[in-house]
Image 1 (cartoon, helix red, strand yellow):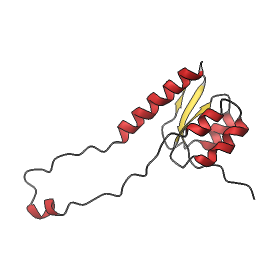
Image 2 (cartoon, helix red, strand yellow):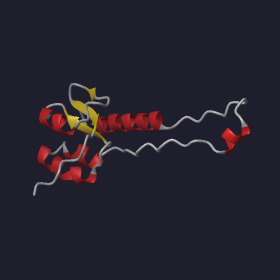
Image 3 (cartoon, one colour):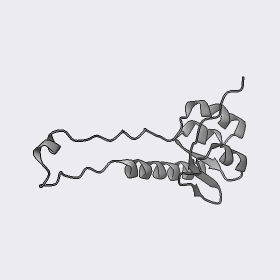
Image 4 (cartoon, one colour):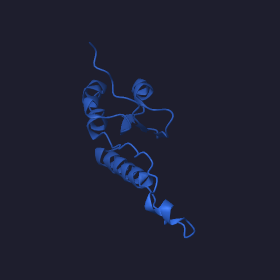
Length: 118
C-alpha cells in the first residue's frame, strides 16, 4: 500500500464521517402551537471531533513517534493505526464506537490521548 492510497482512504473516511455527523433539520410541524415554535428546545451540541493526521502519519515512521504526536489529538478524533500495532489499537481505540479494520490498517475513534508520565 502506498502512502498516497492511505491518505486517500483516510480522507474519504473523514469526509464521510463529517457528512454523517451533520445534523439534519426538519421543518416544524404545521399543527405545532405558536408558543412552541417561538421558543424551540435546543439539545446539547455534539462535541466536535476531527481526524488526527499528526499521529496517523507518525505511525508510518514508528510507534514511538506516533505516541509523541498524540499530544496534538483530542478525545473523539479519528485515527488510522497499522493493523500490526495491536497494542496501540487496544490502548487508543474506543470500542464503544465503530471500528473499521482492513488487512493493513485499523480506523477508530480515540478514547483518550496517552497521559504524560510524571
